[in-house]
Length: 106
Image (tube, rainbow, N blue to C red; front, side, top):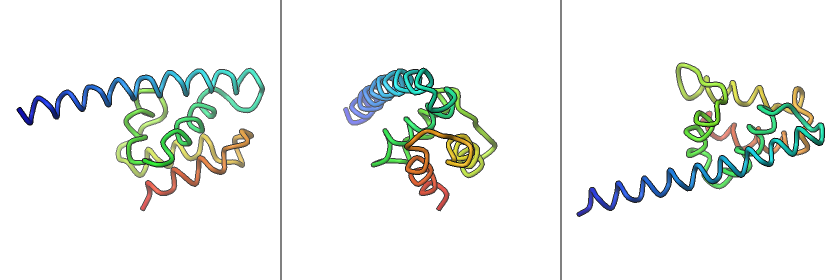
């Protein structure tokens, strides 16, 4: 019985992740319409903030979203951080997004 419950839990988490992704994609499109950032920048910011309380879960969803990936987690996080770094991204929450992502580097 335990493996079945575990599989069901993973399935519901995946469904939840897709709902979060859809929500963040919609917010990112709104951000682009407002001229705050490019779509990928806005999506990286929105996903980072959405996963602020559990940043370790962010990478799977960011990969599903089509954000940059690299050979390892550290390189992937750095690539995403470059997208939403406040020097490159004018989104008002860019700094906070980078602060969430930097926790994944340690």
